[in-house]
Structures are given as structure tokens and as C-alpha cells.
Length: 124
Image 1 (cartoon, rainbow, N blue to C red):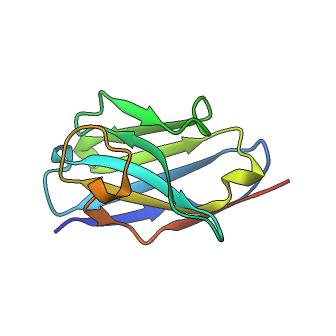
Image 2: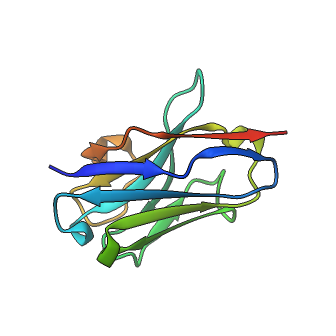
């Protein structure tokens, strides 16, 4: 079992930045690809970013590419989502997830463990 806990959400003005962190415990962290997803009110959950177990490979949704950066420190069992140039449409609950695979995964069904989510609100 892997426990995933997000932190770092909050309220920010458009154009601002937030840094989300995710801590995972229970297994060897580098054995897991990690991903960030988000769900806005009234909308389905959507993929945001993912990083391979080694940290070498990353992939982003087109909507966040160039603004968000995902990174991980395996020695600290943490993954981070740096969000810059935030827009009101980035407002959502952000979820961190862990996959038992080590590759790059865009679909939620490829992830085995999920955090409770952290709220991000961007005002215009």
C-alpha cells in the first residue's frame, strides 16, 4: 500500500504562482511513476502532468505546457508541481497519484494510489 498526501494549494491571483507538493510513503518511491490530475467543478477529472519513476521523462497536458513543471526527489519521496502564470481556468482540486509502473501514463486508470486532493483557486 502507498499513501499519497498533497499539500500547497491555495488562492492566488491570475498570473501568480503556486507550488504543490506530494509525499508518498509505503514502497520504494522510484518504483512509481507519479502524476497530477485536476477536477474543476462540474467537469471530469483531467490529466495535468506525469513523471517517470527515474524522473528522466515528463509529459504535460497542452493546457499547462510551458507554465507548469513537474519534478521529483526520490531520496525524499516527494514530487512537486510548480505552477506559474496561473489562469482562472486552472481553478480545480488537484490530485497526486502513484502508478505501479515506472513509465509515462496519461490515463487515470493507470494509477493505483490517489491523494485526497488540494484546492487551487485562481482569481481574475
